[in-house]
Length: 610
Image (cartoon, rainbow, N blue to C red; front, side, top):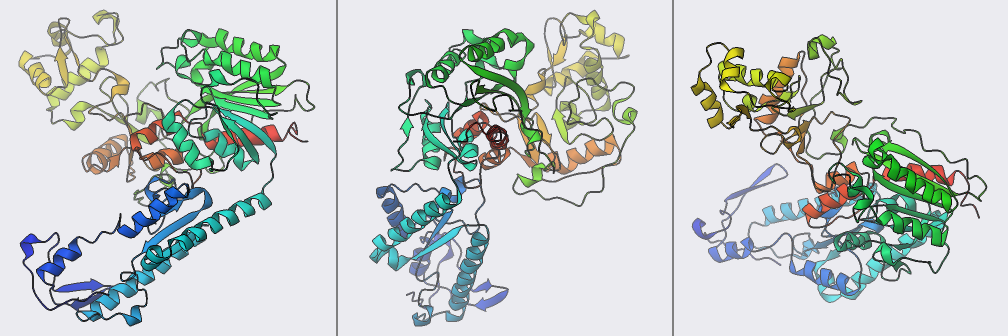
């Protein structure tokens, strides 16, 4: 019950200014301003973290029921439930008796009753709208009244348990176990999410990262789960059960360019010995192991051959292939090597083949990113290559770039040039002469007459030969603007490393792009634009990007939730509350749809058929 009296209030002391009119559902109500005391009470009322939420939160923790907040679930949930139990598709709301209209007809509202009745009515309507939206997406909604949580908490918890039990029962009826597996180097569970969807039953997992293990357990384990947590793979030996499949994303840093490609000299590279040992000891019917593209590099051929021959020696027919996440309905350029082995005494051992690309729709980034506003775009203009590149098309263009279309991304870089390259002199106020100087350095810095490096400093004397009437103070201005720096050898760009970008930005992808850069554990300087642009010429395209996207700051980093989507994690998956950690964990993970298709190909050989 809420009683409001007809007294006014001093505005300066209030969290929010008091008002003499309020609008609900486009209907404006004249209201009497509340007293100072009443306004202060009202300003302290929480919309989140309320006392009844704390009651339920403590009860869920006591009952060891895994829960999270909607901010940490891949799917965006209507109405922002107070608690979510994602794996069982359960959204829970804690509704205040007054605000949500419990026995609204019995309420005695003595002041501004028309306004409060309209507000409560709108709250109830919104509750029903949220329920309908969530239910339409397969979520079960439980709403608990304030008095229920205070007076009948046990019954509330029982309703939650009944839903979980019913959900498990339905799952057992719908699915059956096609094969068993153990999950090595499990991370947050990319392999598991895909394999369970194919009818796999996990019997144990191995991971040494405590934060990743916490997320893994939150999503996949129950308190009554009879499943072994092995810890480090170095402690895994002969298992107390037979297992059909062993999978894992073997630590990859030792084979990556970023990891200096030390291979087996790196302790992380030596974990392959443990992986081979576990397979040999337990002789599963098959295995799937994932690693970075670098292991497939000719420089690592000897190491890859050793791994394959080691598995051959212990009785497995082994195939390996590079698979790109972009070929499996994800707009992410993520190429990884997959090593698949089938025990050579099994019928069907030779029938396994890697899945074909399954990208039927070429999804756009906009389908994975929140807050994007797409303007209606005409069909892309087709250009003559010379309009985009001049007389020579760069050989370094990848399969996602078409030679007769404008790029779907912009690169912030001073050491290269192209129709979607943004230079520091594009975003810092510079004169035409200063731009001329910068382009002269850009075009000549790699010429051998100025030195043996990939990018050489150029002296003032040398620059005077390239630019007539050049004055030293003109170079000094570019140094002051931090576009150039000066060394003993001459002048060079401050932003001299391609991937370092400019001011923390390397690439900005348009939301209409069919690709985003590879997600990594260490993060990138790549962004996504929140609006799309189109143009009829390269010059117009670049200027529109600068004026509409860059200067208006219509771009940002992707969120942890979006990183999970770009890795194909299921909508119910809940990620780490530390968003920096969540980014790292998704960057380390495997792309779920790739494993899903790999598992389908393996199952189709019938090697798991009992």
